[in-house]
Image (cartoon, rainbow, N blue to C red; front, side, top):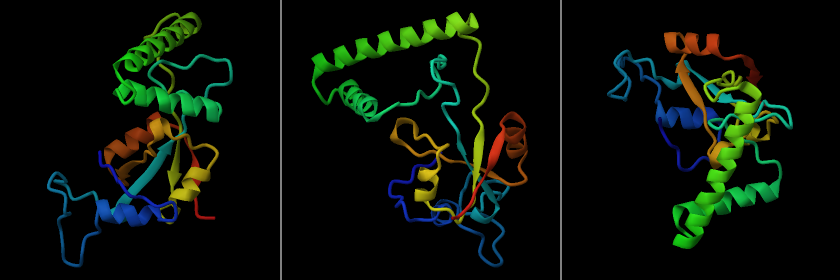
Length: 182
């Protein structure tokens, strides 16, 4: 996985894809990535997706390993402050309090899931996905009502178009459509 530190809302996805996975130049037969033995990771040949998290209806339990939707600004601020406290930014006492609160929340989440599904082994269906057209900007993606940003990180999944992993991914997950430029 790669991390792009500076991604302006006005930048097209294609621009950042070209930085991470540059297109092959005329006459080149190998991509710039030493791990790309089959030379498949060329930005012009990649399919880009984002996951549609939180498809549970209100009141239904969320699997402990799934992304839980923050319902309002207050819950987002509590999540942010808890994250800071867990990192130790607020001191060791607050870190201990935050850890206890998170354990309690996780316990309640597990209990609700087990009550409904009788086991933690019962996993939710894989999240559906939306394909992203490369000409779309990050702002377009963030404005899409299906997009949920887990842990304050926008996450895209990229596959070479004809790769078996891409085909298997689409068999496993329902694609809700293509997000195109407005």
